[in-house]
Image 1 (cartoon, one colour):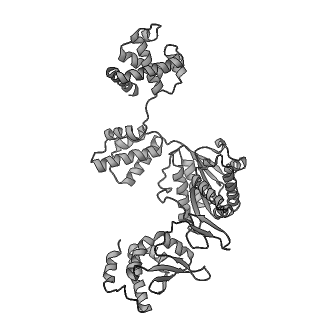
Image 2: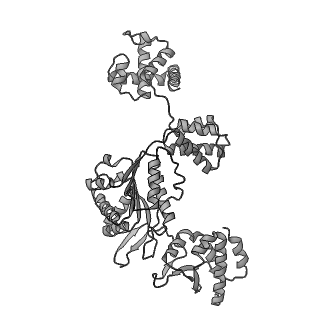
Image 3: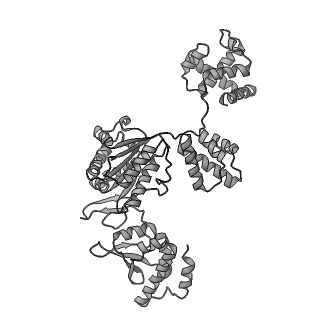
Length: 487
């Protein structure tokens, strides 16, 4: 770390095996500690979180620090322990442990071991100390809960590229972030297909709320995790405490709300949470792969509430938006991707942001680890493996024409009632390729090729597949036809 050389200079004459003699020595060591912290943080961070902290005493094992209030404990433990632990142990000894002291009007002393893992599950205690619930979002030992928001800091409004496909969602999200709980968009229900950015925009709103209103409790949780926690609460007879915990959140973001389907007990718990938050003027943000009207096996009273605010859809990005998304992601990857490659990706990849991310990651890996130059040719090669590429719509008629051309059968003969070996085989190949490369039902394929039924199509497909396994020349001919079909 940045402060280690600094520490080495100040530790030369310190004998940790001998007890520290007086408070002046302790204070001098604490000042050295603060100097190391200052070197490892920004000036604003230091002034906000460490300048107000003072040393009370050190008994050879426990270092007692006075902090203004409980929020300092949670913030320091959450963000600075990896930096503080080696610094304090180098200055005060390997066995040194931290204990925070909060003024009586703010709360009790809060012991936190030097090796504390703040992500561990610990008991949630109400201010009455009469109810306990295990919850992974509560910081250990603090009466007033401090919630780890579970948000990904990389998901921001700025990194969510705007286009026609998401403009309503993005604009509404900004409005919610500016005034959580007070806009008409409560709940904000965001829906759309997989990979279109629902999780990104929902978490981006949460991050923006945290930035503007750090005092608010923001929590992101998937419905899958919510269900798992609820099940645990039932087993531990802590359902009331579980509900009470969620009712204390200021901005609740639930991902994949459709997973409530078919879970009546969980729906009842969530109904109580929803009602309380709504009446208290708290903000709810829900995401789903379906609009509310298409959700199945969810109570009508919940579906009605989902429609109270705004339901906004994320649709597939158009070409221009995909280009902007790709350029944005390339700039964050700090890699040189030629313009023609970015345009090719935007043109070729299906409308799914995850596919774009996968293709770019693969390009970068090939360039960095295999020393390959990023070109359109490499992009084409990558797309065959990692993503589905847009192709022209393949029709039964187009397949028929190419089969006739390659196999030397005239269209008139193909459509006639003749059943010579060459004509029959050409029809079987056309059925096989039509089944493989079109979405047409078997009955439609059979009707278009000789007026046959679906059983004949299945038999023809089986015949062609078997012959391809035993006849290399025939297989190569089929592969040649396929290439022409897919060009």
